Image 1 (cartoon, helix red, strand yellow):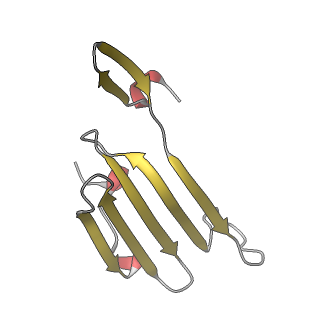
Image 2: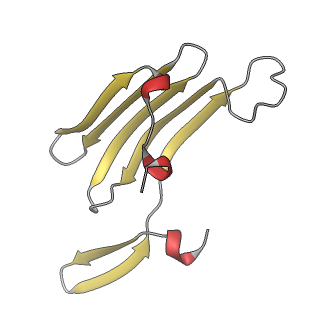
Length: 104
């Protein structure tokens, strides 16, 4: 991981300021069923755990990518308030122009 990809978080305790790299505290799983010639992607991917969001808040994230059943599901919850920040469930074929695939 290059330094430009890292997201640093500033933590301020009473009288102490520290900066540290905070990553993802999550479990990730993937399943590939049988031989899929020429395919690099998994049939089923799942992630569940905690991480820091882009604005620095600690969130709980659940994501499922099921290529076999054409399903994309994501839920992001603020750990401090319990507020649902993002919730989506739709066919994977409609999940375009997100993340690094955005049209610039």
